[in-house]
Length: 121
Image (cartoon, rainbow, N blue to C red; front, side, top):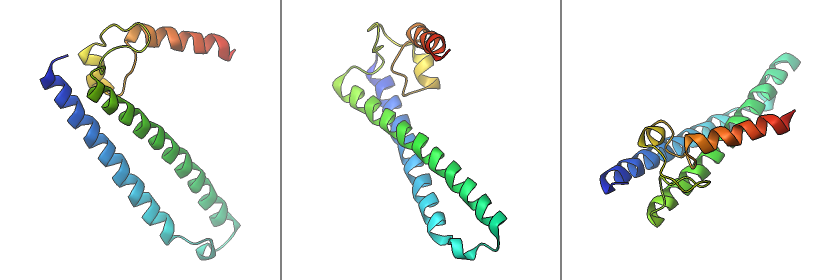
């Protein structure tokens, strides 16, 4: 992969990471402002608990995405970014543009997902 492309992907990944971290900080600030004592009845409390559950799931997904971003940035530094973890063939630039944290080429990812579907049933 060309150095120009690597730099572009690095900027894209760093920007995405900063955006995720800022949204996490914003959520933490909003959560700190809400107290269970402010809720009027059980319905409000139940709705608040559902919102908290959803927020925790979203934050966990963001945490996993940040880990994938860190892995991609590490691969850029090592010179292995854009190489499939499975078959070690180059990952198409279009795939990386759509999903900069991709670690597998389309063929290997499809095979992995197919195996996951088979073992899920």
